[in-house]
Image 1 (cartoon, rainbow, N blue to C red):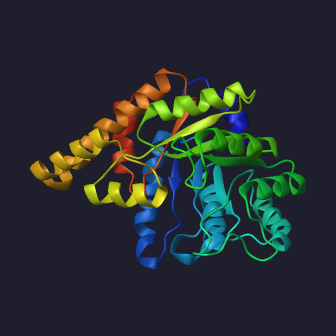
Image 2 (image 1 turned 90 degrees about the vertical axis):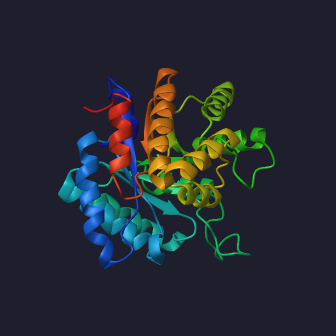
Length: 290
């Protein structure tokens, strides 16, 4: 199923999830148990990240194919400028289509320190979007959006211009980086609409499991954590350790989801990090279980 069509056809807010291909044999069992668990929320789609454990696009494509073929999920594997060579892209897209995959997320990815692109490769997500659109017009293309601004952007104004440019290259929708302040999301959507672009922008929410996790993930994703939230997490940890942080994380994520949907977000994209329990609790508390 094409994700844009599914969004338009849906009669209620949806949930989608982000899955990381297992990095080793030891992670296989836990990963597939998490997949079975998240199927209970009937996700509109499952995004499959690229590059886990250095496996890159191969692990992504393999995992996405199994999720689609054996688990009946609509999948959206990541394509990155880092892993995709222009010469190999036609074969990559043909293989995905042959596996019944009709959606991709085109992102730049993280180049090694000091590099901005492979020689002759894609430098920007917009380049990748344009090439995918020309080669495979019947694949739905998503792109990344950054409510807090991309770390390379000089300003939020520039960031909106870059997002609109990616969408204008032929992308059908956007999925945000995780964020903690809903005002940033709604401001981004309003700024994008002011440019005349009304394509769907799906907000991403992280249910926080532990104090160390929120600090690592926020640093990795360049997602600033509001001081009030971080202080509350640290207080919960001081009182009850990571179990206290976990309870607070579920409560904050459920409240964030409820506010996003109440004010018009089409759905929410959740990060289980291959452990489904927190996401299931958030979905239940937000009243989104099917």
